[in-house]
Image 1 (cartoon, helix red, strand yellow):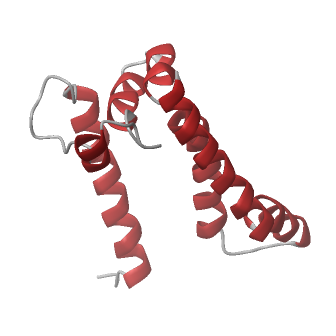
Image 2 (tube, rainbow, N blue to C red):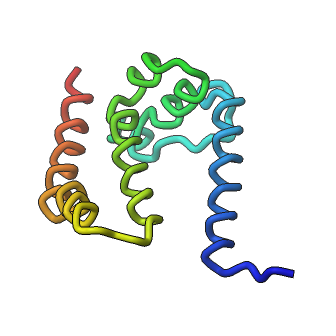
Length: 129
């Protein structure tokens, strides 16, 4: 019987968690079902945080409504490929010089400040309009 490593267990557990979460968000609309968590920042202040609408955006995205997903939280939709590529780079074990340079460019210190600035600007602008 083959032995499963801890790393493989993490991958298997992550895959199960992702598929289960996708099924729940595809099947149930967060606006219509009460068991989804509500944003504490919005509840306390009445202002949208950068993550507000992400659950609804995920629901619409999984059901093929890209425009509705974009309306609910544009930043979430734009960030998905960025986060996905970062996860891919973390999983990939064999780095060559080109991948190392790409990682430094897109996920280095400057990139962190750019992403942070985009989030803050998005947070302010979405509450103005």
